Length: 158
Image (tube, rainbow, N blue to C red; front, side, top):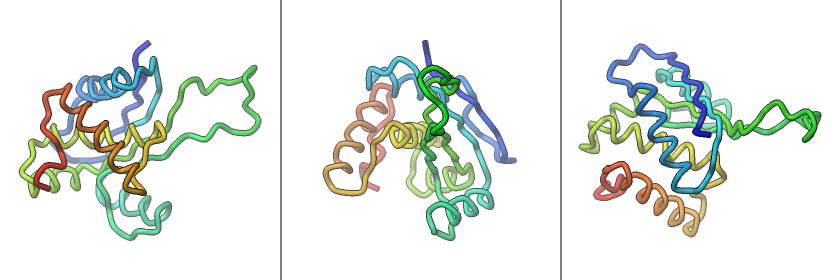
């Protein structure tokens, strides 16, 4: 079963990726990691909402490109009554920040969107970039997945 995507658009931005592109990117991540299925929510927001969430949950008073919120199953949900399925969590992607970064870094806009979805999804699946070993592992995976989508190394020259 492929990924399940709940797409929420809370932005007036234009040039957003469509649901088909998001699903392609998400399913490419799952295929690369041999994961059969997950469900995620992708909420596309403007800078005000991104800044508010980044401040509230990360203590940083600025908007950011992507925030990942891993789903934590409630204690009362046991194997017998698990209605959560394979829900991995939520990605909050800030459209104006992604567009600005793509422009500043000389990247194609949709390629940068793909990178943000791949990066955020890897966070939902337990990958991180806090120490050097984690950075290397996560960035290597990102490069491999994006290469499958014919997208250049997002870390090259940036």
